[in-house]
Image (tube, rainbow, N blue to C red):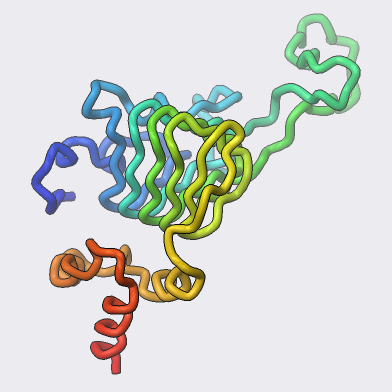
Length: 217
């Protein structure tokens, strides 16, 4: 698709570069690593070999919404059917040694269960070299500081940072956050977004809310 904003992001829109069927990305979300010669798909790390695997095989997917800003070096750690379990006596994944366990005829317990899809909302900004663990859900409008380790779900318009990442503050008050979630500007067509840029690119949610209300009544 044609990128309407004429900046270096023209060549780094993720959707235009992803080939994996396990990565689903909305319109206009970009990865700054392309600007530094990196591939976004190298950021998505699966425990399993995905060659010849299909979505119906139960592989967790990475789902990214629209208008997300993802900085260089971000890593998405995706789940799989193998791994380590620190609750067992041996954390080493002994079931990998198939040639040494030919007489193990029972169904072998897997060390790690699928964590579920990793889901990134719309208008999410993820700082450089952040690592996002399997199955994490990051809601619309969230911001994550550089080099954070995200192990928990993040709510809408929350700012998180650190290792492990913790909430620092909310971008707006709860009332304004709900208004923004109702407005869903990322679902507008580009023409409408451009018409409302003077209101979108400022901190006053009330003015945008009032304008949209007038247009819909």
